[in-house]
Image (tube, rainbow, N blue to C red; front, side, top):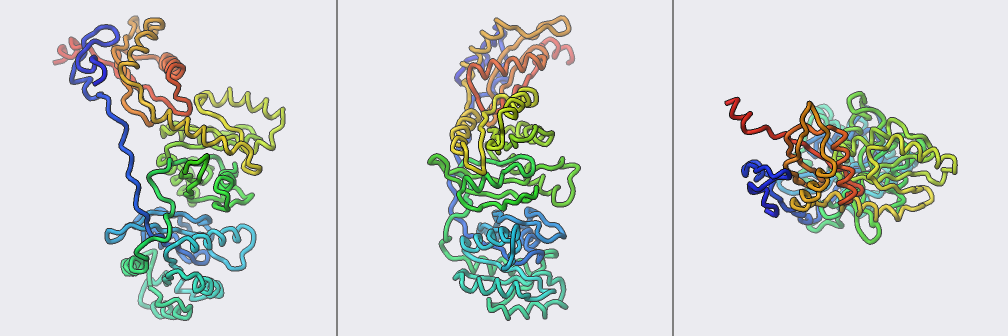
Amino acid sequence: MTDESLAGGSGLDGTWTDEAEWAQFDEAGLPEDESAPTPQPVLAVVGRPNVGKSTLVNRLLGRREAVVQDVPGVTRDRVAYDALWNGRRFTVVDTGGWEPDAKGLQAAVAAQAEMAMSTADAVLLVVDAQVGATATEEAVAKVLRRSKRPVLVAANKVDDERTMAEAHTLWSLGLGEPMPVSGLHGRGSGDLLDRILDTFPDTPREEFGATGGPRRVALVGKPNVGKSSLLNRLTGELRAVVDDVAGTTVDPVDSLVELDGEVWRFVDTAGLRKRVKTASGTEYYASLRTKAAIEAAEVAIVLVDASEPLSEQDLRVFTMVVEAGRALVIAYNKWDLVDEDRRHQLEKEIDRELVRVRWAERVNVSAQTGRAVAKLAPTLRTALASWDTRIPTGQLNSWLSDLVAANPPPVRGGKQPKILFATQAHPRPPTLVLFTTGFLEAGYRRFLERKFRETFGFTGSPVRISVRVRERKGAKSGRR
């Protein structure tokens, strides 16, 4: 222990404290770094729209991850999930529906599927057995035969013996024996998983979306604010599908991005359109994925459309990030569309609406032109450094003693509460625990946080202050 008050010494006011009570707040080191994972083989799941790819992916994963709805085209980007079967881990990449002659948005979706095929170790072509091989499947099969990748054919929607005959007609695709499965009911999924493992090479072609080392960054914001455009700008490729229609992204999309000489893991998420409790269908599951992406990240970049007034949706995104306790960087996108009048108005909106996140760094960017995108990496490092910081208990109590002596807590109920002791219970996010003899007003806690930041920094990270009122021993014995 670095401070003797932890072991029964005196608190800020000289009161002797109980050793057992303070012992649980002994200073622990930061969490150990996760070891780098070994590369996993990658399976790309492809097929035309609405053949049940995402339903089958959920069946292979053994959990509901991919967004599923009875509407064609729900999955639009390529999305990676971790899978485990018979003790072997691999990555499943769900893709948007593949159409050989697609135009517009569907062409971008098809490009995502082709990109997944080019980086995978094996490909699973999903065909609706009840419909049979269409011209689209024949075109896909022609591409796959040239890809020099191991290919499996899943004859999906074989829910009973009556559709087994339809499954055998898929031999005509020239991709080997079709595997009859039912993504909805699970029929044949175990045999398919065994075949998938047998198909994988001994050494994966390349590491796809590895987890562990790179710091995790969530791109969040309301729909059509430019999240996917920014991700594409950062990666230098068409990594996420972009369209003028709001809500193009449904699933979170992982990308490894190199910024300023460092690799980061970016997750582009669906825009938060409605509250999770009131959203329905695709939006409901997309909201859950976005919330999970924030909680799985270490730092969030909240994109705000600088050309439009701050909305309730923007404020709700900030609330989600702060409540999740994640580091924060605010990126005002579409800055190329902001004139002098709008800048002046935006400053007023920030002062009025974003009081709660004044500690977050701001970057004015343009995903369209690339303006100031390079500034994101330094601000991310600053925010994460604050998020990881731990102040030694002795230093913290020395600072707090001087501050409280000059600015004591306000009187409440005729009595002035005293702060006996303080410790930073843990980082990520930095959390201070204050042991007091009485309740501390919310205004005084905000004052402590402001002074704490002025002294120790913590730019870009939320700071939580927890107050624990310690009852007098006489009062405890009286109850006994």
